[in-house]
Image (cartoon, rainbow, N blue to C red; front, side, top):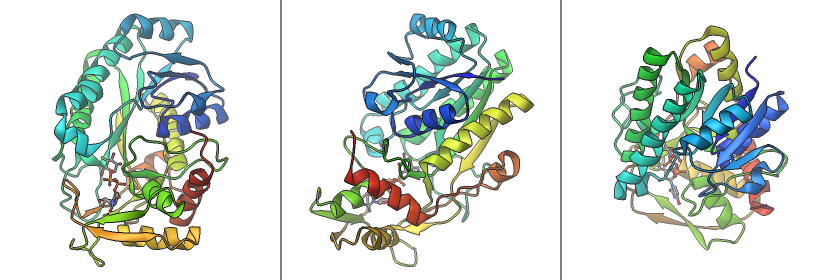
Length: 325
Ligand code: UFG
């Protein structure tokens, strides 16, 4: 059985929730993180190594010391706007560094890899719900850097038999029910944490980026999915990859779209705070609607999200009120 899992970027938001899920399922996660964005407190109970994944001697040492069976990668840059301004950073970190990692994995005969991909690889949707076969036309360097890595993975399978699963997250949100770990980006750009910071009085107001979209209330629609549901998908994907020994790609979302205005409405209800909302111009690079068709994940992995919108916002609110980092 695959047991020892190297989680690169495990001190970050999604990585730290996956580390929890792995431990709970009897795996032994080992975290490698350079702490440029991650938080050491998020992974205080598991083996931890600080360093960069382009450091091949370090990777080789970790692979051997912990008898690593599979690798997961969460150590990407994720800010779409920044990627437009500094594309070199994104291709370097999200593509080139993964290439170093794959080379080291192939040399050390580690045959299983799970890659955090994104809905941003699709670009502007051409149909209502985005399935795995939807055309890939990423409209920003962030999406391109992830799509290039997905393409690279195919060739490492062909050449070295390195099996991979790319999980394309839609809008990850929420926090662990324990309240110990949660989302903490700096700067924060995501809607739900920003809305909750407004509710907590840490921000004066929240801006709605665009009220003239072709949607029922004019604001953008997204598919929000709880971080623990995403974490569970990683375990299921790992089990599936080991059993079938094939590379796969899955779109992970709830299949439900909520508008920015609906999120704000729900957040006001849950927090009981009528915080200030301002209308603002559209943000560059935002598609009007992004909703996943995750029926492949349901069919092949038995994955179905369990957290509804209320619980997603509630767990994020619990975290926001009592943040540990
Ligand atoms: N929004 C606001 N006000 C804010 C922040 C966001 O109105 O202060 C809006 C955005 O314009 C967008 C929606 O809220 O319409 C959601 O925005 P987020 O920044 O929370 O999330 P995105 O949909 O832009 O991005 C997410 C991930 C990215 C990934 C992308 C793929 O965070 O990493 O989905 O679609 F690339």
